[in-house]
Image 1: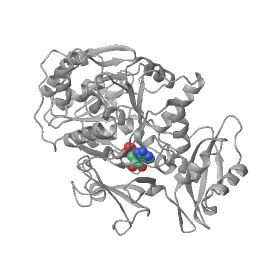
Image 2: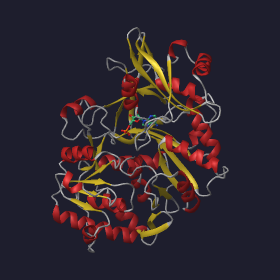
Image 3: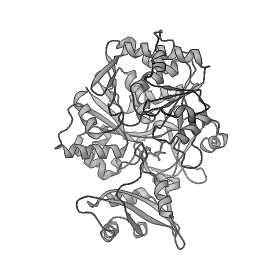
Image 4: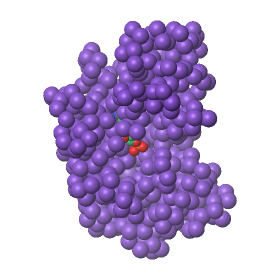
Length: 502
Ligand code: AMP
């Protein structure tokens, strides 16, 4: 089934309801969105053969909603690209995907055509509006295996890889989301796109729009905590997907304006990076029981495990510090280095099998064979280290490449970070390994000190001694003003590592 059927069905059922807003302003009803999508699909279909890749390079804009569905209706493949990348990186993705067209926002378009090997159309420009000649929405009949979205990973090593997500993958993600995370989604709800729509927030168009919820794209085209809080005061049943670092910024913004909870905030789904226990507790105090967590990766979008809002109603630190239960339809195992299942409580690599797991990486058979050694439909090796307990509850340790091996012992940075963050003098921290002649690697903590009462290295060392094993303590503290982060709010360990290695 073509993903665009979700839009067609929602438009039939909720024709006159608001489908898309720009900030506080309603833009299009579901009937209007269907019309615009039909027009875009017709124009794209006239110019591109089925399966052609259409790249989108834009900050968050309302047009992204009609574009994604228009691309799918035409039987084409969307390639949303992180708008904060360098043009050179965009070019590399466009070349890798052999994209037939790049749809770029007016802010990013100047000079682009000269830098790219394919035509560029500018959102909102006359040539784009010309695409919008009225046409009924015709949906290409595609199978579940048809490619829908090439999801480019951040490419920490070498060229970035395009995870091939099919219509079937994203439909399974949608159904699992409605089953496990936000079953209440309906026309009384709004989906706020604060996080980048080229990533998680764009994926969450699907379950929310399918249920008749309105899509709200902030006027700032991104995440401004003050604006976001205002929108949660206005739009009914506001919900959003946010990276943990965005949740922290939102909490700080709320505190700065007196702590009054936004009236319409219903749900914040966080994930994509570690949410530290200390921060989660503070955020739950500030916003109330609105939080749900997902653990996933581009290769199995938004869907490995989840911790529902009801699961957050606990004092059990082990539950709040975990990533939850396997998602509906997803199989999960933790394997040792020989590929055998680890007993409960023992760490190993997390592997996942199920209908959300990608078909492979675009044009990269070697990387595909590494991630999916049994071929498509087999286990996906996530590269994450985790621990399952006897009930099947998963706790994440770290990415396997981030584990620090010091004097022969494995140290999981996240555990050290959790300990340091309980010190009031620490605002943010990132723990990583630095090469060392004597120990192989030593633990280094890069710390953003709290503005009031900043901590020093001696105080933090004493703090760690009370909380974690001696050998896990950082041997070195580096104090910085801010941690380098991606546009998705993830700490860029690679940049910090390069900085430390000098
Ligand atoms: P990406 O494919 O860029 O979305 O990155 C996926 C990676 O982010 C995963 O493999 C994990 O290492 C990390 N991640 C995702 N969700 C969570 C979560 N809820 N808690 C901690 N780390 C997470």
